[in-house]
Length: 616
Image 1 (cartoon, rainbow, N blue to C red):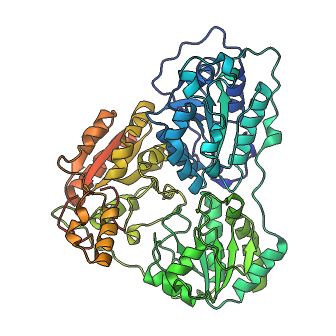
Image 2 (image 1 turned 90 degrees about the horizontal axis):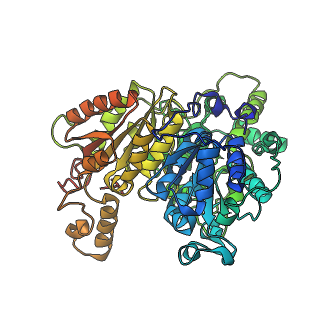
Image 3 (image 1 turned 180 degrees about the vertical axis):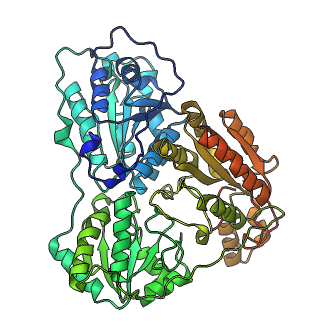
């Protein structure tokens, strides 16, 4: 789509504007005019302004691949070659988390789709848009090649992911394929966002065009404006909130736009409301603001529980798992005494297969709109009812600045020491964190901009951290922001060969591995089982550790063509970050294997340097 026509102010930032060449040589074709069905499909992708298409090559879409190269010249979209289909989808998800725009993905037949299913599920749960193109062996059995075309043909391939995509199709003609790709983009890019899937028959791709192809005017098929709240709902919400003695705003899934960020701040200040945010979703509100009265959390803290209990009116702005928040703060069967306003369009995605709709929360005023569509008219209504545009007197005690302790000067870091060094590094720079290792100490984060943190992977799929970070870094290239992530060692070990794509394409990224050499999240679960069942807690590490031999994570990184080093203490980690920054600012990729001791103070109960996730 023509970006000039888009209204989301996230597009006003310099993101996703840089085009760059990879390292693939290209011989220009002498017959680059449109002549094949797959040329028409590629042309439709270009007209939608899909700048990149991540893929793992496969024969089932060899026709489309040829068209991307020899008809489009590997530009708009430009191919990002990946070593695994999960990485192709993961990169598209990371790109969408920054830009709120779809990227293209191409997957080889049923087997490529099977590889990618976990990543598609992550994108679905993360509400991230992308257009996925799949392929299948010829639908016409009479022209299938023996063996290979038969095992790579499925009668209803989209059924593999239909429960966690917004829409799928398998068009049977060139005209139908053009419309299908257009519809897939339109649906993916309409809130609530999500992945769509179009399966292209190999026989159709490789057929010659017999007549002139007519392409639709994409300006007439743009995604619709996000749903807006009714005037009555806005007035009712404003009345409830302005009359509240202890209003609370739960800032959930909101946009990356700076204007929207500022509007959220203005609304909170106009109400004097306390603000809570969630580490599972992207940065939604400045964490140091006096109204952000306790740190963002992956799970509610005693402080956020007390705030929820005391609130008389709660405004939920697309808060993920609102019912779960009430259970964790009030108790499983406790009544919700607060008046609850819940603004979301997530209901439109809920189906009977995936439980990512969570529990059904009690709500007094349900507003079917996107959060950012509600905020501005609600702010206007609040100011009108108050008779002033000045900030209200805060109705909660302001958050008091807390001076963070320094990381341990000697010895192996705990996860908290690691987080404190990362905080020091980020405070003086514009850094976009593409992710944090699970169990990250949330009081160490300092979000000042909507792109300071772009959220977790959505579905909790292990191995997505590297590819998500590469996609975010791709979107940030040329913006001046430093792309960075902290992944667990298990996450990196599963997804490390995604780094080859970053090296090959020149996508600058600083990656830190919180390496405790054990799947520590599951250690906590095994400890719980042992306690409940009266069994030895000492056995909680059995079947969890990644030692004997320890994995050479920097060796894995260097094998993908990127640079890196190991850091064994806070001082070495600080120095490694500076060396890494220099390389990343110059366009490179740098990986730091930061050793973490799960037996450090506050990090567990065993002096053992051992995984992927730190924390329960």
